[in-house]
Image 1: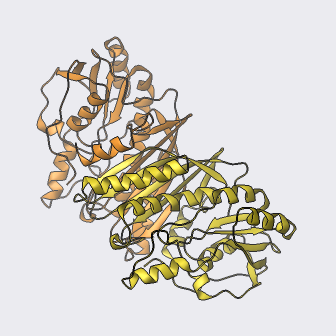
Image 2 (image 1 turned 45 degrees about the horizontal axis):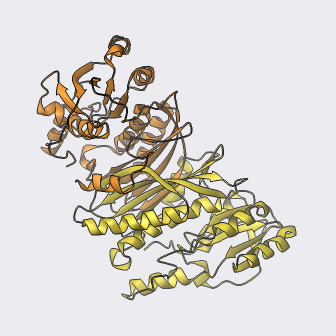
Length: 273
Length: 273
């Protein structure tokens, strides 16, 4: 068992184990975005760090079918950041908050040896919550977008290269409008933060399902983390609806597998550098 | 302006600037508890780290007059922690959660070079919220308990000494029952996390008040951080009520100043090591 799974198991209860936790009509989610774990300073501007920290958290709310409303920011910042650098961080937080209509209502700021960000997003459910649990044998599995670019971007950075400002590794593309319309027709969903293979293994384990592949996926697609595309399952009878919604929103839809009896084991390596 | 004040100012809105943020009947609070910022590994067992991380967060909820219900845990942990060490952490989180009737409903776990904990506490208001704002000129100011021991404990640790298991620096003493009964009679409150002088300066600034001292307080009392005692203000006509509630709960009450026209400036040093 990985340490993360070991830890998740210790706190297991009916609200835990999803991208967000549902209480009444609220969804609470929290992700960490740490220097030298999720990013290196050389790879991102301060503003980009703040923007991505917000987006990876907002992503959790979206895949639960919840609309972000409030955020709490935990900021651990080196003492030697200049006021300009702190302002660049602010700008990233505030412009992303504004874009998603989020109010930043609190948090904590401390001095630290590196930039470690922890964000809590408080969201309101947009109808019924979508959980990781809900997949049934026979349901189709799909993911959005083109997977693989995040891993390629990471490799370029690790080899000393640079990425364009809008590269998906720098700035994930979230699909709130698409997913809010899609949500009534899916049986389960989660965002792809640790790579399709790893996240699929989690989704299938939670639903006690195995998988039969409809396509052969490349390693690049399977093991690319931090994509923040959406992995979801649905009953075949919703296929037409789902294809139409994807088309309407210009979202590339990849129906790649069918859930069936059995188990699926993750065999790749964890993606964080 | 300190960096923290600079950051708080950037995000200023009517919900921000308190120990917790109030939305409907909920209170949301988030504090960081980071290795080499708030604690050193040599000073705490793993269980004590988890317990204190929980308590400093629960403290925020209590002083807002809110009862903790749920927690999200952000855990950044070194890869070399053993399963026994992780279990000791779990034990600290779970036993504190149980004691305060909190359900741990989610969060995030990552690998990191040190133990950095971020906790979000979701609480339900117990009647009316108590804010930092509300102090009026003429109101009395009080703090609970005996301040100074936390600073002394920190100094002992910094000089290579050890503290007893129950030392207040290791395990703050929260006073939920006392404060929930007291709340209707106070005009403002906050916990004393950065030292009475620093926290008083924040409270007074937020209420545009100065202070006239009723007692001379020692530096030890003024500059001892991480006490998690409660600083609050109240109208003199509530004094009898408040004294009775403190007596009933065995809480030492120190009425030390009166709010008045003017300003109070913090002159000490920040307490984090």
